[in-house]
Length: 157
Image (tube, rainbow, N blue to C red; front, side, top):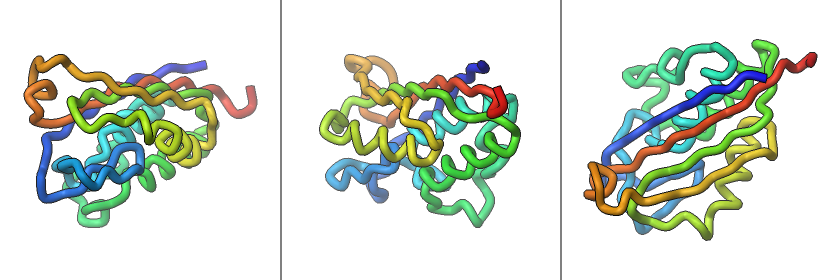
């Protein structure tokens, strides 16, 4: 078994939709980024790639590359799952915590877990959220962040 951690942060951009773990939150401001700026997918991708010793999301999907402009991060995460499987690993489990003051994700948690699980071909997915009680850039409502941990294991083992 191998473990990896991932972290991502994006500032809010009122002109974009908010997408978290592939779920659209139409009433909330979106996040700035080259792709759809889904902080959960980005942190999970880095955790999975790190666990497999395969670098980070920026190596596979550079932020300046035109082909990734406004791309679905859920699609990118699916490709990360393929990359990890091609390297001989399967994703055993993922746990992610998104840091944001609003919106609340509770009503969408199961859909978020299903989206991530489909992308990575696993049902062992945890998704949760917390606020920072008004502290720091997230607490001031300037953006959102996510931390994730992933466990991978060799396919043949």
